[in-house]
Length: 212
Picture 1: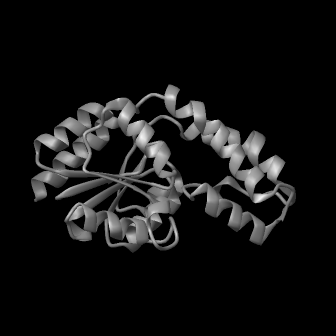
Picture 2: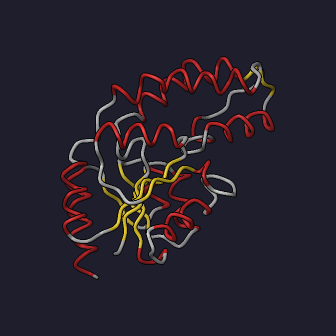
């Protein structure tokens, strides 16, 4: 294992429940005029691509600009107040001590990723948003293929930590070993390994590093 590629929301920062509640209670009811989309359809997908998907599938009540503003206004304060996931700083330090290269690979815009990394002073090599990649976002493999290239590792020597099924699909399609973090049933079914909590994730990395 040469590099670890972390998703951000729900893996590095404790924001997943916020976004799921905001989508269910505010964004989707306001945006979709006719239909009842499932959050699983859009989980782990960049919010700009989410609008495109919804507009292709359902009758929309909001313009693209209005839809994007619902996400951007919510994010303005969220990433200044959210906490790191328990144990993440210690885990990152342990991986660094073992010589692992680290990337953040997220469907969130680069501005949001930068805000989190700078706020917490995270020691990472590569920051990559799906918006930085010339291709579709998760669940397509493009962002993980680029992430592996930028950390100078072949995909087979990387491990991706994801909490959503679409994130797991993206990494798997890129040839990266996947860890489903947090216990989502579909993500667990799709992933190569699982780790439901920080302790389990730390133990799993110890095992993978021991394997070489």
